[in-house]
Length: 444
Image (cartoon, rainbow, N blue to C red; front, side, top):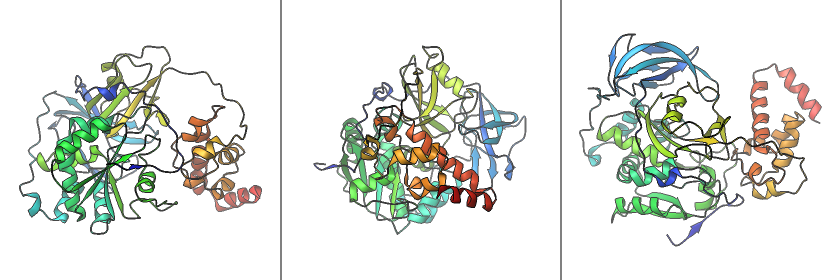
């Protein structure tokens, strides 16, 4: 652990988190949870009907795309509704009243074989059946299938990322044994004999907890990352550890690097130790306008309102509540919407006046950009709606880390404008080709 790894660009982002220093807690349970089944218009099959009793971990629906939905509580099916996620996408949903007993389903049965006797296919099948996902929402079984016997390196990303970065840090400390055990199961599925554990130079408590759980095993190698944002992004992890830079559309997985977080490993361990699907979400509640800062373990489908209430009402009027890591995130507009992300930070912050100016071409955003882009040009072309020109300037290389906005002396929303350009191009992809050709001509 003597080497200190890093990547080009980035910025030093101080940690403002208070929840980081407090163990994960389980708050008072919500009276109901709302679980999305499938996007409106998508096919799905219900395994329950209104009035049915359900148990924690019980299969309640199967959806197209090989997705299964499990009840996160025990209780009764109250009915069916429609809800929206943080991005405004509409889903059909099931509402379940919580009896607060969390009685496990008979379907949840521990894995009966030793790991050494379990085949990779058996592991991948269990992960598929229980619908375990990465923090980014990708089906883990598809990652394991693609990486099986072709993985260059398996990386456990236990680093935090500055600003408000709490959940995986706390899981590395509070559930270190589960995390290491889950990593061993994934190693078996991938056919690898070593795990690279990466942590930040400011994450020594997490690294020590994981190292203690590893013991004298030679299956794990620890690597320290320099305290610089956004070091947890997969492409930048690969760059830091190997010096290899991955350009769009190549992903870390495409290049043979399988990267998971402590939360994923803990879920895999629970699947094998208890037969339990991922029924809980981990959310770090923090920010200068929150009354209590802490990391919570709540049932999937718990409303944002309930999470906010158990942490105390915002201490200032008009507080902004966003889901993200501090530099980037989505503002919560519907407090009654269910929280669905398996691991996330909920930031309650005091609104700040708009003090943005005009771009002074200082170049700080370009110097800090870890993807070697010119964010000021991408922002300019987004404002002028010259989206095709922005695309040619590397728009899709942008990882939307927000470091450009963070270092901007004029407080310009550089990252948001770049994201808007991507959104505009996605909308145009569904429009007639003549419309796109018209814009290309206007760009020249």
